[in-house]
Image 1: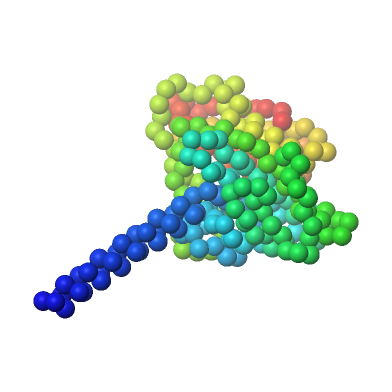
Image 2: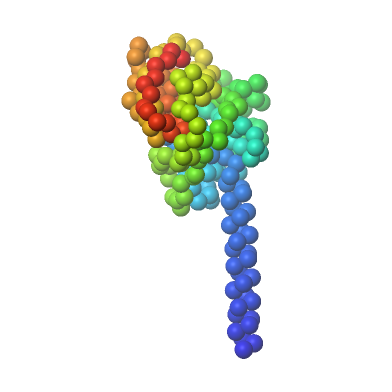
Length: 250
């Protein structure tokens, strides 16, 4: 009997510890979110979070030459989020460590020198050459596009959808409201490539809130245009009663 009581007690203690550990890991993984479908050339090298989209402080990423890293950082459940985009301008892959959910957010090895964030911009250099360019912006959050991260034990980057949208409530978004929602992320792309020309794109918002048929109308593919294409193709709107064809010059 005593042996059984000790066994039950030990089992209960282990259960409590496992629960606390799980809660702690969940909290540590809630602040930084990777956008895989908008992060071409980004690989996860080290990360203990159970989702390939959630990243912990200290997670290590590899950014291939010409690759793009797109993150969302949030520290307050009621606040808007900060989004970051970084571009590898170096001729070699860069190893990036997540420093946490506050600036500077990212760190490179001692071979590189990173400037402090000046406004919404940070550059990291190797000698005189810029190796990494980053921009950030506050992006509004909307209650009608709630995301649920995909759970996985893999540390390999996979192109997974960012989640399910809330059921439709209220009238369909107007064309002006659709543009209002995409502009903050479009401006991030433009800030990363400030010398690029404006371009016109078309796309279709489906009834389930996903985006299809994204295409350039008057320009060839460039780093800026690819950033805009990836952003629109993976944007999430609330559900609507009818599809909506859109066209806009960014």
